[in-house]
Image (cartoon, rainbow, N blue to C red; front, side, top):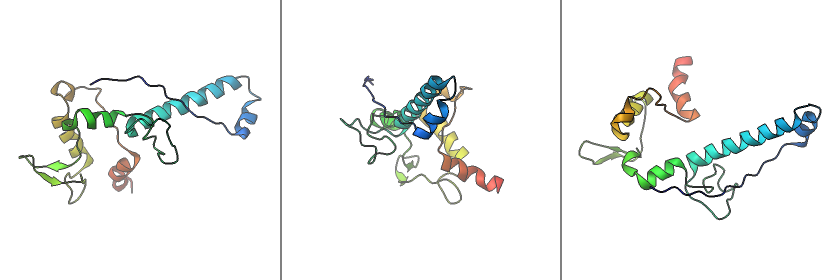
Length: 152
């Protein structure tokens, strides 16, 4: 369970049209700085969720989700605490019943909420289970699958 500190270089660009537009404002440097900080932060989050390895030189075209920038948070769990990662469905004896976790009608879980409850009750330490600051981060598509039937 060691952490390493590695340098990450960021590439960033602003379209000339945008620079030209911003040049007329007193806070030009602040706008540029904020745009750079925002892009760096978004890239760190993307690498944190999607990173699986650290390449000597990353390749954005082959790894658009920044998979080769660093070992991300989720991959660190996969590598060092696989028992805390839900990657398949098992029965009470530990036998795999499904290699893919399905949510919805005919799935392994009736709803996304049921999956979250199962993960909370079985994958995290008991002292964190009741934490009022506990949050679930899900992708846009999962959220759309959950809420689209309600709003449609």
